[in-house]
Length: 263
Image 1: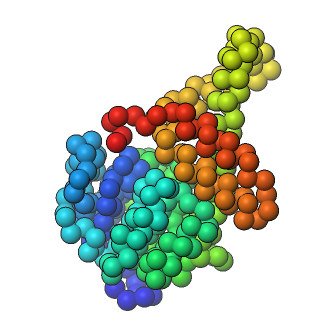
Image 2: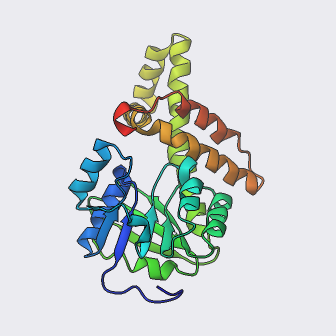
Image 3: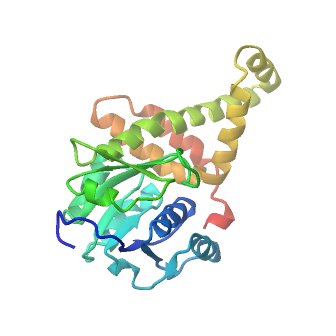
């Protein structure tokens, strides 16, 4: 596929290592009529189950697809890009990385790349999840997503605008979750958890439910958010904003071990 060419009606698209988010994105591509493949080499039984449930096709040659979508932990995004440097397809890098890391990924891929960022939960119902896209080929990439549950949003301006939006968005949603977790651990450490919860019931009634959600998410995905908080810190520092908030948030999430079934 040449630069600037329009996306044809159906394509061969690879979601290489489908985690929870990647499998859900892959299912949307399947529903849009694309032949959607994944690379089974060295992957776990849990990954295989997710891929099969999403309708993805196991293919050791997945990297030769016309389009490759990278959805992986932020700490692995650059390594993933390097593994795709010799491919000829368009790569949509949909990872939670800083604009600086996104630019480095674009250099590795020598322009065969669209900066992407997913905001929202795995897309399983309409109206919950957006895929932000930026760069010269963003409109082309957006044509892939014709299903009802993942809305592509093309951004003008910087080729890494999608990553900038993701970093700013997650700075609040996940950063404030880390602050809430650390606040409760501090109260426990000082023996005033019950008193704090009582005061929340009186003056901040929404916080108890938010804490429960933050604890659940941290147990399930905190290991993955360590790298994301570090990328957010770098994003803040790049525009002369304090980066200590999210370096501390990375330390909070580092205290939650990776669940065995996500390895």
